[in-house]
Structures are given as structure tokens and as C-alpha cells.
Length: 270
Image (cartoon, rainbow, N blue to C red; front, side, top):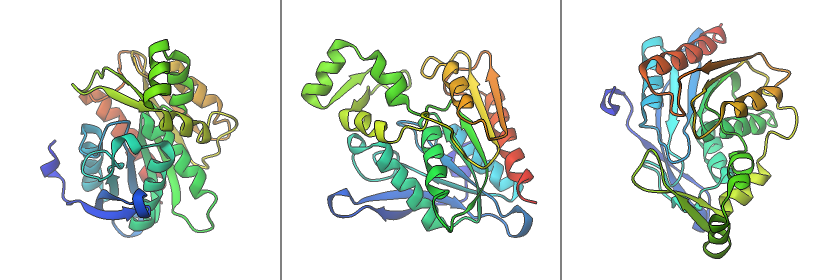
């Protein structure tokens, strides 16, 4: 499905002040009234944006079912402003919370892909601190990568990458998904330490469905098993896709994701 098939055009909000100010692009499909007053909140992965296949298909599901769908691009991604190399988990978390404050959904089901799964968990932690916040109907995590800077990047750095971080403030690695290399900055890695979630019990207060490919070369499925251990108080479903890769964008993968999202949204719309 193409982006042209979706109904909304992007709007922009300003996040941050002074030199940190950046324009964040949002596409919102407003939820129907009454029982179905539930919106999906899409949280993309690292270097991904709201025009990707999974995000667009989630929006199409919302259109078919009368649900809402909120998508946005992190700064340095897609149609949003700001430099990608200024990005950190804290910065992108700030933007996600600003999007929620701007759109003011009543109920949300968060759908986070890869790094978006980490940000989704942090969003819930921050919302649970507030006296007034949208109710959380559920959490769908697709190949989630919480704490990836700490658990998946730092332990595997080569001597050359460590030297590049120290001398240049970043290192590059080839990307399987783009001709441009992935860039990981020292700021991103250091900030990851302050946003760790796999340090104790994570309380989401909502049902959680994790979908993980067992052939994922970027986030091993053992990482999702580890995440489950940190969610002892929640109703957690873990779907392991034996031949699934990191993207989980094949038609059968999309169907699994949409079924999980719709189930959580409609179950909590009563």
C-alpha cells in the first residue's frame, strides 16, 4: 500500500527550545467516537520513518476499523527537521511525548518496531508518572530492541570502532537496508545508559504482544526472551517467527502484527 492511500497530510509541531528546537512531522487519523475511541501510536525503528510498510499498513487497519492512528518522524528522520547525528533516546522520547501531548488521544495502543520498542517502553514509564495521561490499552513490540546500545552495541565494538568513538565521536557500519552506512554516536551510546529499562521489573499496566523473528540478524530472539523476564506483572504473549528476519515486513508478518494490534485495540475499546 502506498503512502498516497492514507488520508492524512503531515502537520508539524515544534519541540525543544533554542538550538535544540526542531520541527516534528505528524500524520494523524482521528479515532472514532464512543466505544472505538482508541488510537494506535506508531514508534519507528532506528533510521526508519512513518512511511514504512508496517506503519502505513497500521494506518490502513485504523481506517478500516474506525480506530485512530498517530504516526510521526523522529528528528533527523523522514520529513522531520533536525540532524540525525543529534539524535538520542532521550531526544526521540521527548518528541514522542510531545506528539502525544499535541494529539491528545484518549486511549492508545503503542506499536513499536526495533528501537521504537525501547522508546515505547520509556513512553509508558513516563506516562505512568503523570496524573493525567491517555489510558494505555496495549503494547505491540516488533523485534524490540530495548537497551540496544548497552546490550547489543557496546559489548561488540571493535578496537577501530572504539577508537572512532573516542576520536571522532561516532562510528559507521554498513547497513543491510540502505546504501548509506549506519552512524552511531557517542552521545547516543552514553544517553542509552540513562534510559535503560532492562534493569528491573518493567510495569506497563497493559497487555503486551511481542513478535520476534528467529532469523533476526540485528536483534537476536534471546533479547526478546530477556525482555519477557522483565515483564512478570503483565499479560505477555511472545510470538516467535521461525523464519522471520528483523524487519518482519512480509505479508504473513504484517498479518500477524495487524492481528495483534487490532486484538489489543478492540479488546480495550469496550
